[in-house]
Every structure is written in structure tokens, then in C-alpha cells.
Picture 1: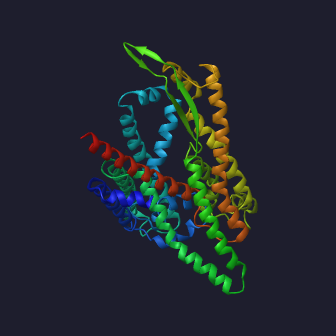
Picture 2: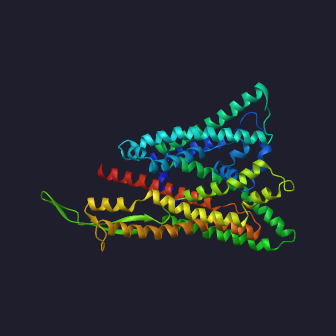
Picture 3: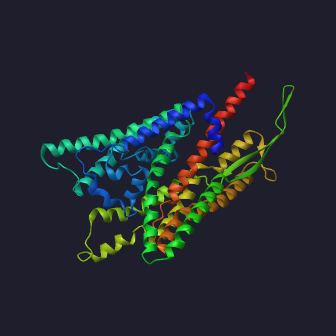
Length: 431
């Protein structure tokens, strides 16, 4: 990967694209440090240490949400809107037909922008009431309170739309996927706390807990193994051989060659983990908002405390939701019947299987096996850091979601650089 970046830096066009991408990321991090007016961010720090949905949103924004800065919402509204539109595309025939048109993707992209603005407005209003209930506002009543609410909500919405636009500029003039790179920068920026965590562990070891001298290097080795494991599993794919029949068009003979249908092991990416973490964190987030007293309401306190990030019930439900969402996401992305029909129309077939239903049944069985392995892989990456944290009492900074995103974005960016260099070499050869 580093060799790829070194070679890309020698090409002027790619060098300019890399510098433009870096400049956008610097602007994003500067926006994450500019506070929103009329808010005291120090009053919100305790809300983002419980492992609930707010902690996840804070991780996706690079800590900007906890500090109430300009880019506090990050690209989360745009991502949520994209997921909603993608699901509606499967459910609504009009959107499905729109996606198949020549300029359908551009129209869907425009719909994503408008939907992202609506989601950003809803999240901004909700977050305003959160910081108001926590007593972090300077003005809450009268005309000053109304003006402060309008300014804060408008700033959050404008920041979300601005950073989405910056991501699109990276797509056009930079390198890699803009939104993914922004999330990548957000996650990496949180790793500055690793030094503090390591220092705290060494302090505990020196204070009479020698087991931490063993836990620390063990976790470092496990983190390296996890990174290698994620890289291998992310690139893994099942290749189904496709054989095309020979046909004569005029005086030319076409077809007759073999190809393959690649099926990625991790076809759904990090989406099942995002869905599962959002759903399983809702009860704990509601409990943190309500601030239920244990003595006054012991039943409700026990119920919401059960969904704490470190509870075993949370781990079990989280695991089951990841498995379910992985199957669901693969089901809406791949249609074996449509794949089999496309192969038949193009005179292609899978050796050993007749075109039509036998081919679609074989693809379905193969997809089910791959989906199961991919679901187990996602569940292991997401749940193991929580289990290790519970067993050792240590806070695992490199969670499953962040690890998958960081590795996936790094691999995609490297592939984009390779594609640009390959295109440049072909142009130079043909020219």
C-alpha cells in the first residue's frame, strides 16, 4: 500500500488529487474544532461514555458531537438518508425503475441530498433538546432562547450539508470515496486517546495489578491479528466459473471464452454492524436521557441498565441482529433469478447446471453459504472487542465497526490509486 502511494506521488495528476483530498480533510478537521455558539461542551462529556447510540455517533463524527462543533453531525445524516433511499428503492417500484434509467443514479443522488437535509434537520432538533436538557445552553427562555435554538439547529444542518458537499468534491477532484474518507479521518482522529489509555494501564500495573503487564502486549498482538484477519476476509471472494457459448456474427466468431462471477465474502460491508448497533443502543440511549433513579424506579432502572454496552444481554442481541441484518442486506442486493436470466440472455452458463432455475438455485445455495460465513465474520469482529473488554476490564479503542471502516477505506483508496495509474499507463501506451 505504501509503495502505491509513493508511486502515485510521482505522477503530477495524482499528486494534485492527493493534495486536494488532504486539503478537504484538513478543512473537515478544522470544522470539527469550531464550537457552535451558545453551547458549553463541557457539560456534555459524561453523555458520551456509556457505549450507547450517542457514543457511536460521536465516534463517526471524530468527537465533534461531544464538543458541539460545526461538523457535529458529520456525514451521518447523509449515510442514513442513503440507506433509507436504498431500502425504498427495493420496496417502491417507481424508485426501482428510476435506478435502472440512464441518468437514474444521478437522480437518486439528488434525492439522497434532499433526504440528507431532512434527516440532518431532524437530528439537529433532537440534539438541541438533548443539550438543552443537560443544561449546556446559555439561553433557554425568551427571545434569546428562541434565537439561540434557531442558530444552533441551522448551524448543525449547514455543517452536515457542507461536509457532504466536501465529500462529493473529493469524489470529483480527489481520490477515493469522499464520504468514506471523511469517516476514516473521524475514526483515526479518536486514536489520539490510545496514549492516555496505555498510560492508564501501565499506571494500574504499577499500582499492584501486574496482570496488566500481560494484558497490554496481548491486546497489541490481538489487534495486529485482527487487522490481518479483516484484510484477508474483506478481499476474500467466491468465484463461480461462467462459460459463454460460441456464436457466429457475420464472419466473426464470438464467445467461447470463460469468465467468472465474483461473490464477495463480506458483501454487505459494515452496514449490518451499523444497523445492529443503532437498534440495540436505543434502550440505553433512552435510559440516559430519562436519567431514571434506581431507588425510585428499580424495575425500569434494571431494564435500561441491561442494555448497557458491557452487559452480556447486549452482546447476545447485538450478535443476533448482525446475523439477521447481514442476510437481509444481501437479500436486497442480490437476486439469483435475475443473475440467472442475465446469464441466459448473454449465452452464459455455469458448467454442470442448466440455464434457468437450476442455475438460480445453485447461486442461491452458494449465496447462503457465503452469507453465513460473512455474518459470522462480522459478528466476530464486532463482538470480540466487547467480550475482551469485559474479561480484562480494559477499554478496547479499536472496535469492530471502526476497524472494518478503516481497513475497507484504506483498501478502496489503494485500489483507486492503482486504477488511476493503470489508466495513465494505458493512455501513454496508446498515445
